[in-house]
Amino acid sequence: PLIHFQHEQEGATLRATELKPKLDKFLIERLKLTHEVKKKGKTVIEPKEEYKSWFNDAEKLSLNYKVRIRNTKDEKSQGEYKYSYFESRIKEEDKGAVKNEIIRELNLPNLDVIAPSAFFANNDKRSNQKYDEIVIGVIWTGIIQVEIITFINALGKQIEKLFPELLCVENFGTRQSKGFGSFLEINTTEDSFSKVLNTNFSFCKKIKVNSRNIYKDIDTIYKNLKNNAGTDVSKIREYYANQGIEWEKRFITKSIVKKEYYDSDNVMYVRALLGLAELHDYQKLKKKVKIKHIKNGDKEITRFQSPVMFKVYEKQIYVVVRDENISEILGEWFNFYIGDFPENERERQALPKLQVPERFDLVDFIKNNI
Image 1 (cartoon, rainbow, N blue to C red):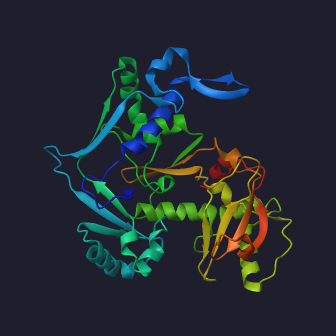
Image 2: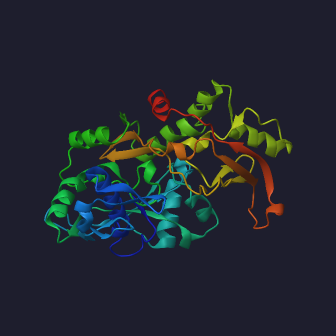
Image 3: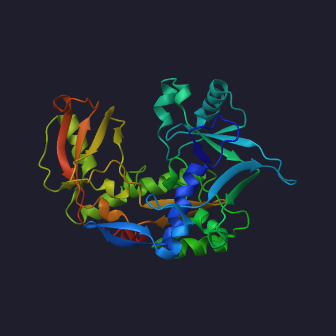
């Protein structure tokens, strides 16, 4: 399912405005179309001379082609919309009632409830009856036709060759790293899919699926890595505990409960290494803690996507690691605020700031814990 912000609109599908920048970046990196040059004392990236005609905007590094996407039907598949409602916590016995509620309120037939899943945004919206804010996953069961138009023959040939690979390595829409929004070119075999993943990522592993809910499996795998899952202790907590470093979750919990701030010399914000959350929900304490990066010179981090990504081939799960950007978060400092986040900084109920560890071998961590 693609978690689509315009799921209710006819024709909702993969968006050209999201696809083209990803395809541009993939082509530029794969074909080495740009290089670094010095201009006015600064290093800038611009198209190589022999490829300048391939770009319609050299400054934004936008390649010279257009993309059109539409849902189509063929003789074998007439095509229809299937909708999915996601929550991170719904009891099995409540799924039927929730399904009827969402179908009734959003007027969406052909809908299924998938829970638990690694999607949290709907939890409070449904309980607070904010149905107009609920986000839905959508699948078009027919063919999705992608038409790419360019007058540059050499560029067109490269797109035709590499486009199926792009779909293997990228997901689209919301919660991309958790397997949502996976698309494949219609002739892609699992062997070719696996080969592309192993070529493009520093780590890739196929995971045995244990349930009929593939997103429950993804949610469990990821929670085992980042948070406590059931009776299992967080793997990243164990990883740093063996180095004498306590994770921030216990420290924050103790601070909220006892309203005292403990010695934080050996406490670090370790969960940020697996993706930066805007807030953490401490359900048992009925508290939410918001996180804000402490600006470091010109560097201000508002988003750090999980470097661990899940790809889906039919009913199979693959875990891959993107470690090229991990250095962005290493050693950075963050503030933590309990509850609301008023504009007036003096009114914020703040906890002591915490630092992200300065060293982390992501591939080694995943290899030993997946």
